[in-house]
Amino acid sequence: VQLVESGGGLVQAGDSLRLSCAASGLTFRHYNIGWFRQAPGKGREFVAAISRSGGATNYADSMEGRFTISRDNAKSTTYLQMNSLKPEDTAVYYCAATSTVGRSYWAVADQYGYWGQGTQVTVSS
Image (cartoon, rainbow, N blue to C red; front, top):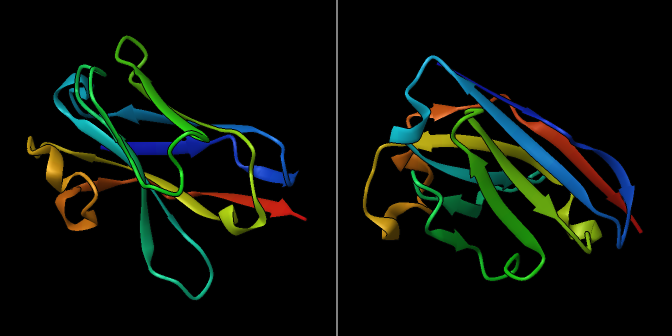
């Protein structure tokens, strides 16, 4: 199983980025997908998650309204559109896959069995 993130980079505050997560080696449509992030010196933080069909999504409170998660099961890819970026959004962003059905567990990193290597997002002020 491989999850490969891309799309990170250095941007200015207020800019937008779209991250992608391409999956292989698993039946993509069977997995809920989450995005997490980790800033230097901090723990891994939940960002957003999307159900297997794409019909349900969850967001961390601080991201809702600025970030949008989506998926294309035909391409085995998940996206994270990030708008109005802030310096505090600077982190390594990871995508992860879980077969856990319960939506209340999507924010829990331990529920995810497969992780990507991460992509760096740096937002300058």
